[in-house]
Length: 233
Image (cartoon, rainbow, N blue to C red; front, side, top):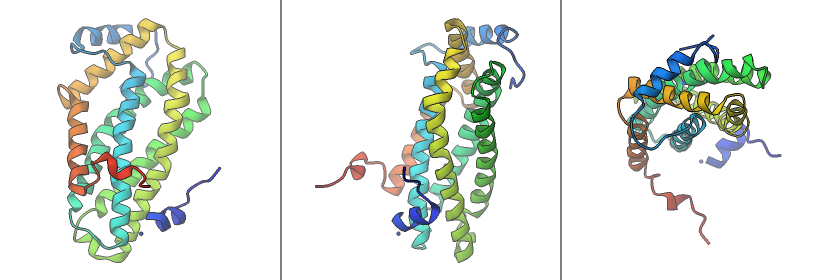
């Protein structure tokens, strides 16, 4: 197995129910079910996994910026700042809070994946600290200093190298285990709770709005066209 280190990567480049139990939270889930928007139902795992897809697109933006910083190309720095705002508001303050308020406590209560959950929680905290660092540095004045460009690159790379395995482990291990410990009704009601929370924070079609924001950033950086990632020849 090959592990991409910071040095190797740079060389190649030139986010409230904590103690809620399943039995005690039924009223909340039922209320959420009554307020769920009409349309295609999305399961809790699918909801969380598509949000991981959004995060992965932001990681591509971060990769692009590591390359730009290495060449001291800091024009359009607002695209990085906008990406960090999405990470803070949608990933850390919404997506990760769903995991911390629902998924992780229920798994630990069931005695499932407790060590994995503990490490994922540590990574959430580490990710927020990295976002704090990179947000402070993502402005044109700061990036006139070479040490700040290097520190920003390092924080972006640390974020990428942590969240790629983080999201993959949740998608392939944590979310399937979470589904297994719930009845189908509990699982369906939880999807309604997720939808309700998203609407409270971001309005109708909150996820779709975030996708559009990321797409606008990708277009500005000229990485929106999927064909540019297709090998030639």
